[in-house]
Length: 147
Ligand code: SF4
Image (cartoon, rainbow, N blue to C red; front, side, top):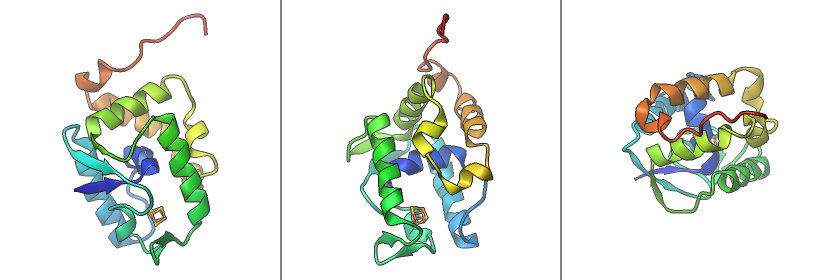
């Protein structure tokens, strides 16, 4: 089964074809196609996932970019979306991400991610989630007034 570490729930919604190597980009594109199908079943894991295994930064089971920072990012997303190490449909992950983003800025999740300077992830995610259609829109919290 496809494995996802928590922060990739966000990255897969924002991915626009940039990455760490041609092989990684190709693998992430395949993974994103699965992710955008709301009926795909995935397993939430700690540490390296299906995407990491295609990444040139994975070394001895750790992220050579900054394993500690990545672990902190995973934990932030895990808590924010109330994720457990279990199976989910990606539709459920979309719903949780949408519910979170209805009340928070994406920057609260992503912190100092290096991709922030290159990609307007918030706009891409908003567009992607909207494209997922009624199944997602039904879950989207209604705009609140007086905020
Ligand atoms: S190994 Fe590190 S840089 Fe590569 S996908 Fe995993 S977390 Fe991201």
